[in-house]
Image 1 (cartoon, rainbow, N blue to C red):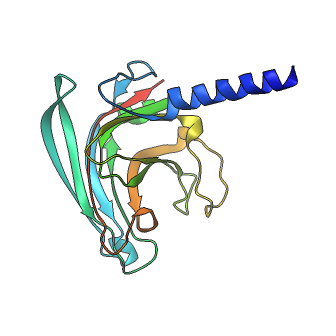
Image 2 (image 1 turned 45 degrees about the vertical axis):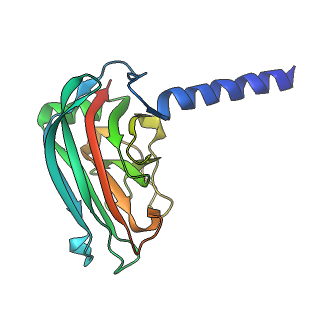
Length: 202
């Protein structure tokens, strides 16, 4: 009987994981409900202030996706090899309405068409001062649109960060990032993604 209960618990946990946190290809909709599209000014950043030479460029496009015209953010660049912790990424400087939604959200979702490499999405909060923000890492498939859906509880600090409490009420923004250590070969590591439909789920 105990073994049967254990199996049922494992099945339920696995079902929750795949429904709410997995990346799914194709034209399927979000399992989290409709959500609200985030608004603000999109931007890119790199490790220039840390004496790196990583690069990131942003182009804003209008494309047809899943039968509708959407705004697509096309980001490409390169990660430095000058030092061990090179990084580059992109993010959204949210307007006031979006920022307030982020502070009370239960989950976020977005579409991404990547290059087969690893990326992360991060909640920036003012109580964290060592850049060890709560993040969720995900993989991409080259040229395949993936819907990434992440409940807030799946965001974790990196192992090197000073332990902090997750407090979205102190959220200052959301960023995505790629890192030197995540590239398959840091000597040849250009990256290129397209992302759209970043939504907040209450």
